[in-house]
Figure (cartoon, chains in turn purple, yellow):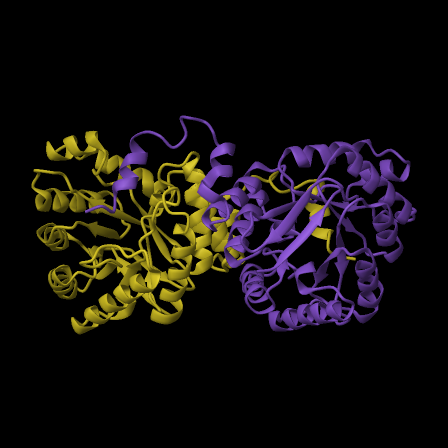
Length: 298
Length: 298
């Protein structure tokens, strides 16, 4: 039973097989958000703060923080964003960069035990990221691609994930602190993207016994009514055993799907969170309720 | 690859592992619908016809027809309902009764190849229902309980299903014409109802290689916002391999979850049905689309 424990100065979050799904807010990421990128580069973090508050209010258990802006001082920006967000929320953070100096700057100012997002299976990346993760006693996201790119063969992706877990162990990082991202492709471009992800998630859980995460909204890229596709993907991924995702809790249908999937996966005990979040006394009542509940009693 | 082929006089529907999920409309069932029961008993089938039209319009691929009204002439009512519904729609029907004479009356007037709903694993029931199914060359729903009731042990439920499949074979009914109902309990009463159903559906598919169905709305009985729970259950069940359900296509969130699950399970080729059903040109566009699609390219 793998448990990945992350924390802020005052709050602990556990990613685990028998735990409610962990929603990691995706919004604080300037990639493709031109206005946010310009503001951050100019030292204006008001939108970062607003996005942090909104996501936590919507139910995010953690927040991903990315400051990847071309031609900007990413280490300084990421450290600043981490500090500001930690000053106004108490959720643990995922420190997200492909630049080692930025990860180091973020880790340097972080209070608690963060998730480092990410290492790939590329030797050069692992040899830079894993020692840093070990030094700070953090947990790490492992993305299942290597020097050859993202394999379309899920057996290869599984082997890459396994290799990262083994390499992490060499650096003293236990497998329960490695959260594997199976890499979810857009279903509009690759019709097997869903089946591939679910099969890989199941193997990662059953064979490697690791927690999993992914950038969930990727799956619906290019499709109409995409939040419905993302929400359904998440519920099916939870059914396959996924334990966290980098996603937006701001879209009602996505969040509702995750909460309902927690109920159905048996991770929302006595449906308590569901009932609390859906308190409308009129919902679910009426003729239909009684009828449908009785339809199999003969 | 099991294919259960059902038909009306003019239309064929295939329930199968690599096929879009088959939605069997649940509405034409007087159990708990007092007004419908009174009307049917008095020979007024206008609501039956309206419910048939509405469900087909909402996307039902088949309709379940039940006429179980206490102290009424169920065989005559079921036969009449079957004839009327076949006169106004062309979807194949599921003829639903626990009374053998009613099943026989429905089969007698049916045009095409129906689904008979249902036999249990009780010897006495199998010995009455299976010969009838064989005689009419129909397909049959197999409910995985027997004389001892519904076991809470899914291994026992699997064995009951296996026994029905074997007994059907004795009567010349091939396993691809047996659609197993794993029996889905209300999650509000039994916290493992979801996990149990998913595990059983997976085994029924992988080991028995049969199609599956269930009364989907049962799972959310008693919960608030129950259609969201039912929809999420269906998407997770599709992820586990379920191929049909008796359900209501009239609730948008339930139908949307099924359609999105078909996309993600790889059964909606090129997302064609999804795109057709969600044609709003503004949906899914905008800044977020581009950003999220790019977030893993580094």
